[in-house]
Length: 145
Image (cartoon, rainbow, N blue to C red; front, side, top):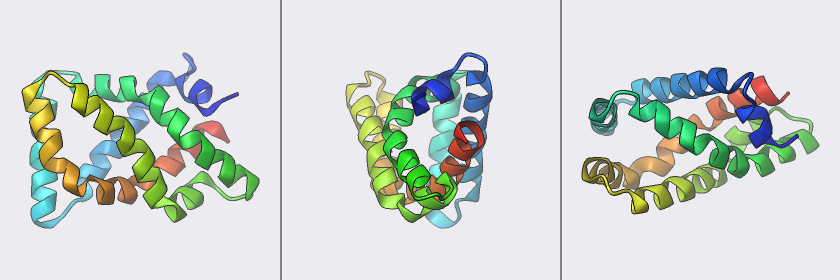
């Protein structure tokens, strides 16, 4: 069964999405300094844009993110290590894979507020996605193990 199938299976999809939202919240709250203020402000703007917007985005991105993470999850399995450990060791490639998806989505967006916020935050996004890699690995370990 593919990682996409595992994470989007109807019986667990709501739990996976809830866990993804918790990871997102935890990552945003963990940010410090000036960049942390920018991230928190941008996240608040996006959350306030439309009720349920962030959840809808997570729901929409989940299948593509699962596809992007699958090769790394398979590498972890083949190496007999957890996805948490493997994703943490391969933060850069994980971030590149996920950001290539969000970059395409942002480029196609017709919403100026969302697009502008994404464009402002994008220069530091790779570092922040890299920081989230172990938590994303934990999500994969939880559901795909």
